[in-house]
Image 1 (spheres, one colour):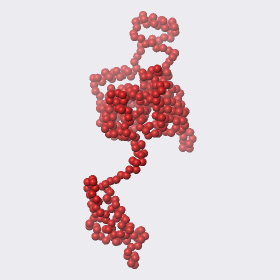
Image 2 (cartoon, helix red, strand yellow; image 1 turned 60 degrees about the horizontal axis):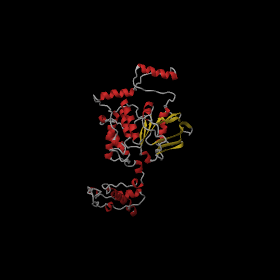
Image 3 (spheres, one colour; image 1 turned 120 degrees about the vertical axis):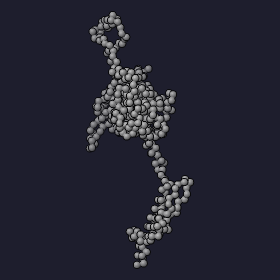
Image 4 (tube, one colour; image 1 turned 30 degrees about the horizontal axis):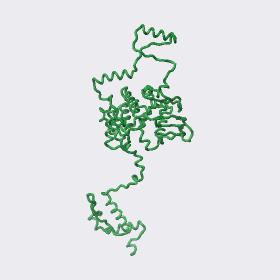
Length: 425
């Protein structure tokens, strides 16, 4: 049995589960205009990420985390090595359809409200309209923006934009979710809910890659992590192994009487000396803050973001009541547009069709020096679909008696021909 992880779930290391992401010798070197190496952002990196695992990417600024994410998304080509996502290239369109991505900065249309924003991103994945609206409603409730559904995104605070950004990353029910600083700008309530959401998604078999500078967040949710520095992985492994201190032991007990405490301390000091420290355990500030806010929430309402919302129904596992069937809705836009039979389909307009042959007929008659009146097209034949018929004569009746011989002569002169009058002369 695998040892428990800090999140309370069994570690997936060496569990034989499906490998979702595999990087082998992954290297990315940025070059200048002349092709000279400028920066080695990622240097010979190897790691694997398995299904249902929460994987942390840690490191200081400029250590290669964002470059690694862009390589996983197929936005950059590796200089050396290779990376696969679901066994395919990250640039594969079908692979991209199974990925949800929250960038470090939320790039959203500021004049759309939350519902319109999610509807737009859902349409990119070819999700049908009723399903898009159903998912949007569930996600808006899940991220706590019910009270702000009529406001535009441009009016949101950074934390509220982050919430709608998380929702758009989940609109396609992805199997791989990449979150870059998901709790940036969020209040402690939002941070706790995002971490609970990550754990819920992992329990439902989804894979989450978390890049964050808030180490406490990583410690709370990640099963394994890698620590970058200078483009290289300096340490990696399960968090319970990385954080363990084998040279010390912590003993936790309920409140003891003074006499019992003295007996215990005397026994321990007899073994290890006076290095024993006795102190009362404390809860962290996050736990205390959440307790105070939860107490206040029962007594008052707020017009801002709310908490305590359920995970969207369609994100629940297929085996749960009300869960999805597990199939992906529709196909990607690029896949649909790449079909020759669909891209080559002509667009025909029944209303404008009669006018185009009429213009060509008139032009052809002028080039051939034939009378225009002889080439006036007939009125369009009635079709099965009732359409308001266009006016039959192309040339107005008032203009028909006009002699067009001068126009014909001028046009034939421009084309290098000779008019009838020229022949007579």
